[in-house]
Image 1: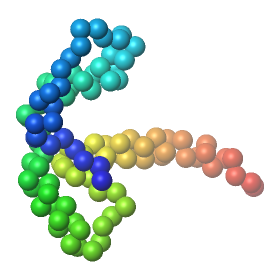
Image 2: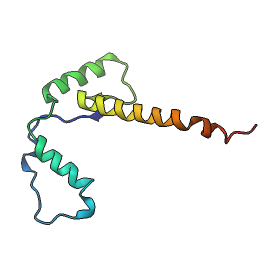
Image 3: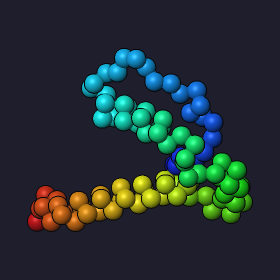
Image 4: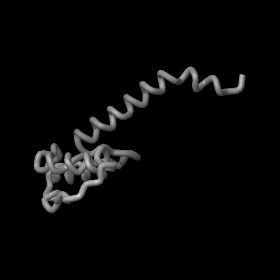
Length: 100
């Protein structure tokens, strides 16, 4: 299960801190700000997520990985497309390491 963002009250209790660590600004700090800015604007509907999961289970064909939500599917697709592009760029050089 690779869930996207769902519109729940999960982040209602999320508060910032007075002290920020600059070294985390581009990683955890960025995620924290995104969570605060996008709260109550997430694309996922938790009620529909439950319905989708029931359909998935009842299908009898549960995949090894399942992207739950349009944002999750979009990000996973983007990541795989980037990885495939990088593979295509370097694949010939990669193959040079095989026995002749």
